Length: 78
Image (cartoon, rainbow, N blue to C red; front, side, top):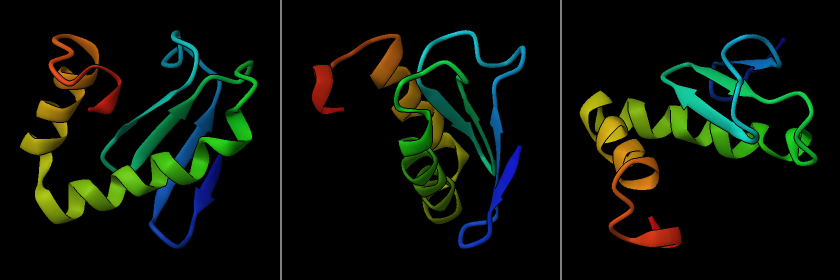
């Protein structure tokens, strides 16, 4: 576990909440799969999502998560 002090994001590497490879963000908490080959490079983008939640709110965060994972309207350009 680490903290990105610039954004206030608490980053967890591994654990029960990181089943899928890669990473995801829930507000000020980022979860990154410990066996992902990109785990060290995912901290900064996931910390950036913390700033999105701060600026635009939780509803937009959930809309974007649905767009990226459930109903990929924009494909990889979400």
